[in-house]
Structure formats: C-alpha cells, structure tokens
Length: 312
Ligand SMILES: Cc1cc2nc3c(=O)[nH]c(=O)nc-3n(C[C@H](O)[C@H](O)[C@H](O)COP(=O)(O)O)c2cc1C
Image (cartoon, rainbow, N blue to C red; front, side, top):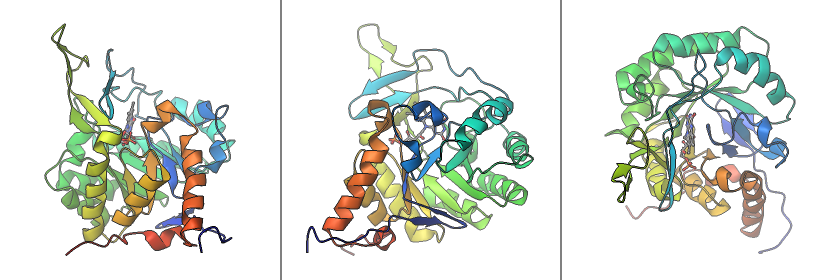
C-alpha cells in the first residue's frame, strides 16, 4: 500500500565492502570531499570518491577547460591535483574526520606510477575504503585512457595493483571503446572487486564567432544528463557479462536516475556534474530514493539490481 511505513534498507555491497547507501559522489566533481562539508552533510553519502591523484602534483591543462553544452558540459581539466605526498599529509587527515566513507581515485601515465601511488597510501595507516583506478581519462596525452582502451593493459595493471592491496579495488572504465565488456572482463579476471562505468565521452564544441574550439585542447570529456543513456547501456552490457558489482556513472540528477541505473545492473552509482549545480544533490537524492522505495513497498535497495525486464 503506498505510504505504508516500511523501513527501507539502502545498504549495498561492493564485494569485500559494504556501504550504508548506494549514492556516491564522482571523482573530480566533489574536490577532496571536506571542502563541501560547510554546504552539505557529507557523512550521509554512500561514499566520496576523491579527485584523481597522481605521483607528482599536476597543474592540469591551460584554460579554457570547461564549457557548458546542451544537457551537460565538456571538461579538459587534465588531472590537476596536489600529488600523492600532499594528499597523504594535508588531505587524508581532513577526510578522515568527515564521517564519510571515502575511496581514493588514482591516475598515472605508466603502470609503475599507479603502483607507486597506491603503495605510498598502503604504507600508512588510514581508514580509506578502497581505490578507484582511473584508466579512462580522455584529457591527458599520456596514460589514462591508454590503459582503459586495451584489455591487455587493463589486465596487467589490475593484476599488479591487486597484489599490493587487500582494500576494495575498482577499475573505472571508459565509454570510448568498441567493447566495454572486454575491458570489464579483463579487470574482473585479474582481481578487481568492482568496475565503475562510465568516465566522460570524448566531445568537442566550437565558438562559431571566433571559430575556435571552446576548449583549449580542442577535445574534452562530455558529462551530464546528455550521456546518461550511454551510461545505462554500458552498465547493462557489463552486467550481462560480469559477475562482480558495477558502479553506474553518467548524467545522474535524481532518485529516478539511480533506480534506472540499478535496474540496468548497477550496485551503486556516482553523481558527477550535478554536484556543480548543487553540492547537496547527492544527499537529496538519497532521501528521495528512500521515499521512492518506501512508496513502492520495496524494503531492500539491492533487490532492484539488474531487474530490468527486457522484451527479449
Ligand atoms: C570537471 C570534471 C572533472 C573530472 N575529473 C575526474 C577525475 O579527476 N578522475 C576521474 O576518474 N573522473 C573525473 N571526472 C569524470 C566523472 O567522475 C564522471 O565519471 C563523469 O563526469 C560522468 O558522470 P556525470 O555525467 O554525472 O558527470 C571528471 C568530470 C568532470 C565533469
């Protein structure tokens, strides 16, 4: 009966780790997490995925590096970040006080670089929940997406990282490939606990007055509601082939979007671009999701995973 009082269990499982709810915030769209603390109660989020961290600090690409497009935005930040040493000394301590589970996103130009970053964090005492490995950044000339477009490279990198950590290991996949399931399987077969999909799609826009691209580096990464159907399709395809959990990303702005991703096969989701409009949107979405499930008499979020009813 709609409106009846049921207690909804929003918890979800990503292999070796359970989270209080499935709504996470996506890397690069929520800073390092604690900056947003004044604007929203970050402890309510399922998890915070922090901005990609590399071995050395990076200033990123020259501006302009963000432009709004129909139904989304194009960015070419180029992995600007403080580097792993400062992440450990200045950022991790603040994150740990925030009461939220957090996942560290790592990027690199070579597989050694990914490994060194992970090893530096493994060498200290921290309550970090796990790692998301960005093998799908379209905005750097070396590394990043090179790994994510090759099943062999994904396999090798996943295997090397797996050997170095007992923590949750998530490989973040690119939609800019012919067959995302081949890359997902390479991650799964070499020890990843979960995959997240998708990172941004390669996009471009041009100012017709100046005849210049809107982005300094010409091409950038498209995100926001415009890419949601690509994200849903990617999650659906992955869910049919993989047995590990999938984290759905791309264009989420509402609890309905979360349910759509879940029906397609996601065990959790991440919200990216929508945070720029309202950093508290993740928390509102969690509350809406709870009410939505309550109204439909669904008492366990996880019972919806992969329940899409296809025609064939
Ligand atoms: C400004 C901006 C910066 C981003 N930086 C990162 C990053 O550092 N590492 C990463 O793995 N993904 C990064 N992403 C990709 C997002 O985490 C997410 O995969 C993508 O934006 C799709 O989700 P959305 O449509 O909800 O934004 C970035 C996205 C945006 C818009």
